[in-house]
Amino acid sequence: METSLDPPDKLKQQDRMVSHISCNGKTIILIGTAHVSRQSARLVEDTIHEQLPDTVCVELCQTRLASLKDADRWRNMDIVKVIKQKKALLLFINLLLASFQKKMADKFNIKPGQEMINAITAAEKTNALVVPADREIQITLSRVWRGMGMWEKMKLMVSLIFSFGASEDIKEEDIEQMKQEDILQTLLADVKKAHPIIERSLIDERDQFLAEKIRSAPGEKIVAVVGAAHAPGIKRYLAGSERIDLDALNTVPPAGNTGKILKWAIPAAILFLFAAGFLMEGKNAGADMIWIWIAANGIFAGIGAMIALAHPLTIISSIIAAPLTSLNPMIAAGWVAGLVEAFSRKPKVKDLEDIPKDIVSIKGFWHNNVTRILLVVIFTNLGSAIGTWTAVPLMLKLIH
Image (cartoon, rainbow, N blue to C red; front, side, top):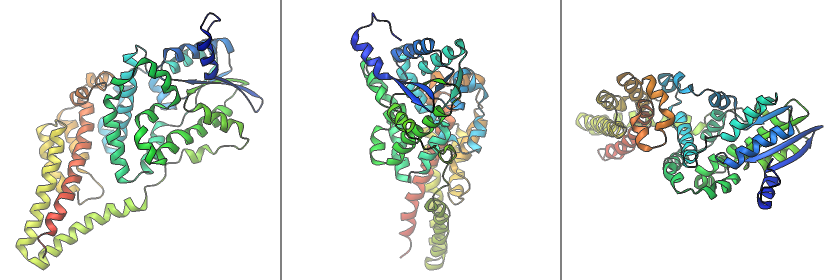
């Protein structure tokens, strides 16, 4: 804790950040922090050294804890595997979030997640057990994604992309205000108002998850380091006696029936449209429909690949693949283009090592061979989708 020489207002502020809770015979010291605050980082370290807890719980999942400890984690990433597992968009969102946090941290000369680093270091020095208490980030984002419709997903992506420059306007005094919000909340402030699934999955569900992990952590004295946005909810759930079902919170809901139906219905409708053109208007009209379909899908997918500054072979492959993949629910043009880009400009170790540096700027995303592949996947898929919705009305005009 800060010494008595600190100003009284700062001590009062720190008192608000630290809560002492009795739960199931345990003493829990809950610290609400800002993720890019020097004051928070120092408070965490001082509190652990003063309290000497048995266990330190941190607002990290196992994956993020491993990443925080492994500075060379990017070297082990297999971008081809990411594309094949259909996780390119998820990785892209993760990188956007990391970019936002890193730019703020660089601006104020503090390492991202320094308070978590301090918590882990202090725990190791005091022989306390470190427990990653947060839900896996992939599960959280997947639950958000599965709970949104197509229009909501598009608005989410736009919000994330436009957040790229948001950190430029943040002043140091704003950082303390950010103690009231999760880093994801800050980025999605506009979208979450219209879509309760974001608030529920990002905040309330994680409050429950964190509370149960903290409550069930071993030891009689526990220090829990969490973002201050989660502190009120955690305290509320810790006060309850009912056990929280972590398995339910860890379950990724299946894709909605509407999406499954549309995935097959749209290609079927297009094929039906082709057949109607041939039967109702003759061979020439049917052939014209096919050419409209090929041109619209190919051209827009190619434009998407060009926007991502793809390799010429990738652009050609996207133009060829899009008219076919748009009729195949099991594969997307962006996946084909991404794989071609990965083999045409195979990422080097340096590209993997430079990811943390390159993601802090828009130019860096396009410059790095790894992140460019993600952009190729996203923009080619977007172009192919635009091509589909452009082609359909043009095709319908040929049927009188």
